[in-house]
Every structure is written in C-alpha cells, then in structure tokens.
Length: 136
Image 1 (tube, rainbow, N blue to C red):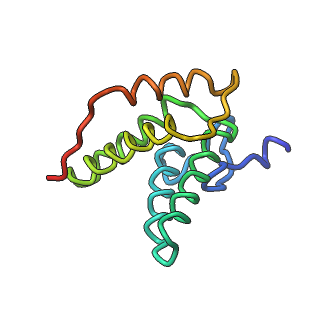
Image 2: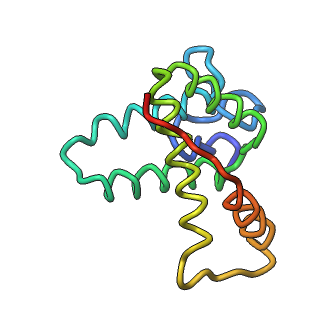
C-alpha cells in the first residue's frame, strides 16, 4: 500500500502529510477515533449488549493494530473522552473494566504465550486488589 493510500484503521480517513495518523477537523486522529467509536456504540441501539461489546472490542483492536498506533496518544485521548462522561458513568465504566480484568483471570481456557504473558500476569495481580466501585 502506498503512502497516499494509508488510512486510519478506525475512521478510515486518509493519513495526511507524512504523519503516522490522520487529522480530522484539526483533532488528533486518536481523539477523533475514540469519540467516533463511542458514538458508533451509542448508535447501535438495535443490537444486543454482546454484539455491542464485540463491535467495541473490534474497533479498539483496529486502532491498536493499525499503522500509526501510539499507546500514549491513544491513552490520552481515551482519558479526555472518559472525563467528558458523567461521574456516575465513570464509576460504572471503571468498575466494569475491573470486573473484565477479573473475568480474564477466571477463564477456564486462557491461552498464554510470550505475546500476552505480561498482560495475563498483570491482570492476575490487578485482580487481587480489593477494588470497590459503588453505584452512587
């Protein structure tokens, strides 16, 4: 694929200039893509929750698997979007993420190799924490 043909893995906007990410209305692509992904999830009201989660995970996978992925930039964009959400939703989201991490460690079949070994080890350590996220 030539430089002119490279596109953002989530929003499919073409990369501009020699950047490793696209620019959309002067926003950094990752901020745009995170916002765009959240909007896509909100618009999928006709889907059941499992389908919505599958789509959300697929979108995040496309972001991190695409060219131009920068962990720090993506994390910053996600944090900015997170802070735009209502405080109760922030609490619910982090509680869900904590439960997701615990669920990973409790899976009956958990394929581990060198590519994900550090992630699984980290999940097991985090799962030991006594984290409570009350609904207020």
